Image (cartoon, rainbow, N blue to C red; front, top):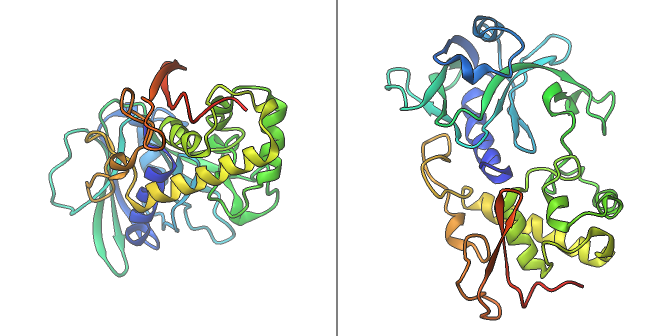
Length: 296
């Protein structure tokens, strides 16, 4: 599933093509791709045609492009990539991708015409036009407005306004397992299973340790490792295990080649040589070193 690094890579790739561009045409090829839009597919298209787009933004795994407004942006096309969603930039005359669900034709004042494909093999992702509303942690700040579907999502560790002390306090009040806290989007967003396992390994924290027993310094060190892991993944274009995650140019990320714990079960821990263990976790898996990552 695309997480913060993958969605941020898409945002960075989209920005030059869409910032300042005008939407000229929208074609919805599969109504399931607009299932989170409040209205039929025709309404989704009508809300976008003629709109001038601003710089793309992101909160956690939600990606949106505010629509320019004389006063302040009040709506935006919102994308959630789900399990296999892709946002791809193509020439207007290029053939559809195999799983293209929506086509959006835009014209940029400098770069000319381009076609945006929303492709999604498994259709867990979607696009919609959503209203922008005040963020709970920044009331009254126009620049910090969020789509209504994302108001419950906390800031991520790479956000300049990320409040580490408040997050650590909230984690400890939860009295839950540390890994569950890292995946709780109302506490901290954008991490996901892969990056949680990698950060826990780097910080030497057992995934099932209780947040109530995690010391302040240990929690701070863990969040530092989360940042490091996310920044490394971002620099390598995200993580791709198959063709379900690609950047806007259809290229894979390479962080999968740098994994220390996730998916490494049975292989020696890069730090101590003990075989990495995989345990069932929330219909997925936790990967950790039973020697390095002990309860503290």
